[in-house]
Every structure is written in C-alpha cells, then in structure tokens.
Image (cartoon, rainbow, N blue to C red):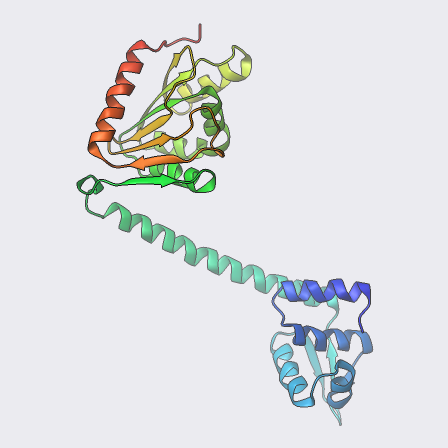
Length: 269
C-alpha cells in the first residue's frame, strides 16, 4: 500500500511513539487526502469503529484535523509537521524521565551515605569488567571525603585520567580530597609529562613512580574500601575486580601502598 518513502515515514512515526494502526490511518490520509470516515476505513482496511477511535486519538495528538461538513471529512497535517510535533513530545517526555531519574539517583546516594558503616559488615564482591566496574569506581570517588590511594600501571593511569575518571577526580579535589598515585614509570615524552603536570597542578595529586609495572593494581578510598584488579596487565575494559570493605584487607592494602610509596621516586628521571 505504501511506497518506499512512506515505509521510512511509517518507521519514523512508530519510533516516535505512534501505534502501527494509528500510523496506518495517518499515512492513508497523507496518501489519499481528506476522506470521510467510511472511505478512510475502506482505504486503510480497518474496521470503521476502530478507525473512529484512532481518529479521535490522532485528533488529540494534533496530527489530523476534522473538516466540519456533511458528511465530515478528516485531513492529516503535513508529515514534516507531524514528525516535529511527535519529536517535541518525545523530547519533553525524555526530559521528564531524566529529571525523575536524577531525583531517584540523588535519593539513592543519600540513602547510601546514611547507611550504617559498612565496615561492620565486611563484604567481598567480584565486579565484572567494563561499564559496571567503571561505574563502581566513579561512585567510590564521588563518595570519598578524605583520601584516595592508587597503584596503577601507566596504561591504566592514562586511561583513567583522560577518558574515565578525570571529572570525578576534579570534583574530589574541589572537596579537598587528597589523592596519591603510585604509577609505573611512563615513556619519557611530552604527552606523559603533560598528564603528570595536569594531575599535580589541576587535581592537586601527589604522584610517584616505580620502575616496572606493578604486580597488583588497586585503589583505596577513605581507608574504608578497596578495589583490586584481577589481571594487572589488562586495561579497564578487560579485567574484573574485587571490591571489599573488609577492614583487614584494606589495612593490608594500605601497608603495601605505604611501603611502595617509600620506595617510589618523585621524578620521572
């Protein structure tokens, strides 16, 4: 019934929220022009009572107009106007959902902060690689109030600062969170020097270097949580991690961090 062009219009209207039958009625009016109810039902191959209900719905949406004559006829607004109207409605719906979702996110953050100190109930959680791990680390940074300690390969350090956690670390710095990084010594070039300078000056971070890739990649937040990467040689997208709030494991990680910190070098040389 419809041309290739109207097939694409059919899909666009469906994507913007119209039902298939409402779309069929609307496009029938676009193709054949203003029509009476009985003629429209015949052209669209839809039962007359059903067409009447769909016309009522389309009128409320502003996509068709009723021509007051005897018998009454119905006319569709131009397709470009219909698409714009539906897109605007969809955008407003999305913005409302986004607003409500943001309220829920903030509410859940508040609830998390108000929970009983989780160290009283030690947990060990294996976090899958990819977006879930990235989200977990971002949340940990956002909830940190005092200090962050990291041991990283240069690859993970550069990935994290440039692509994933830069904004979170900037907000942490604005809250006067002290961050220390022990990082594998990078290749000596302008890019690595600029990145180190950015961390020290923009984020207020302290950075020291070790000669080789660390055997264990981990981060400690407020001396309460630790995230340990399962495979040190991989990037953020390829390795799961162990998260824990166990005070014993956190203390073990801190002892190891402080020992490495004493041995690490301040300069890249």
